[in-house]
Length: 263
Image (cartoon, rainbow, N blue to C red; front, side):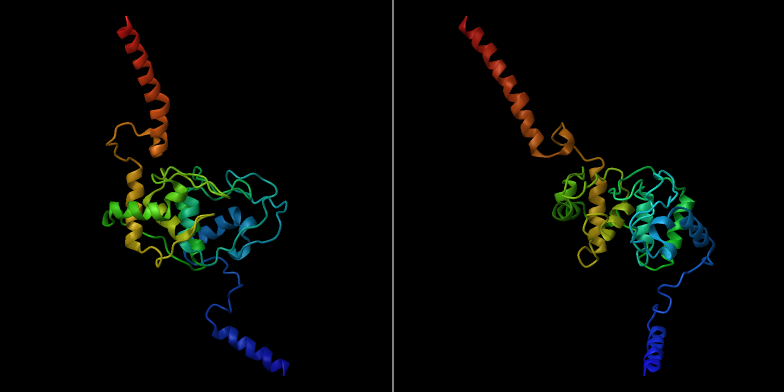
């Protein structure tokens, strides 16, 4: 009976797509760019993300996890599986400088990109061999600026502020989006890096995403119809200017006029 159950289980594994090789190392990919990425992964990513990109969930060890700009020692710790993240996540984290992390446990922050464009393409190609979404191609010219502002205000301004200047939330620091490219904005929306929520195509369609991207691009150089922008932080700094600059100036002016009239 046990032999029959074992045989049935083996047959089921063969019949389920991808089940038979789910934990089998891919080895060196045949495609040259992905093959180069395979070797780069072994050099810079293996210590944290594990062999076969399956992730590492053990406690940090003394494995060096050699990588550019990374502190050595205590770097062999927890790294998520890269199966299914696709070229989408790999491209975002590498091109923003979020990876490699300088030290485990830190919030990924934008840093100078430490890999060449060819190296990034190779690593992205290798990670893409494990399946997952492709890199998006946003078309902000097809989006609506007014709709993008409304969508950004509804979904994003609570953390990033209405003009994408960044902010503070529990457990993280939402970055400003001044350096974010159109593709990086689209990637972040679909990925939900760190504490940011992930927005699927059901939550935000591609056309709505185009509108958000267009609005974020507008915030890089917004118009100033009212004159002094005051950091684009909204009515609070404008009110502070009124209280601490305009009102004292008016009081001084009133005192000067009163003295002249009293003579």
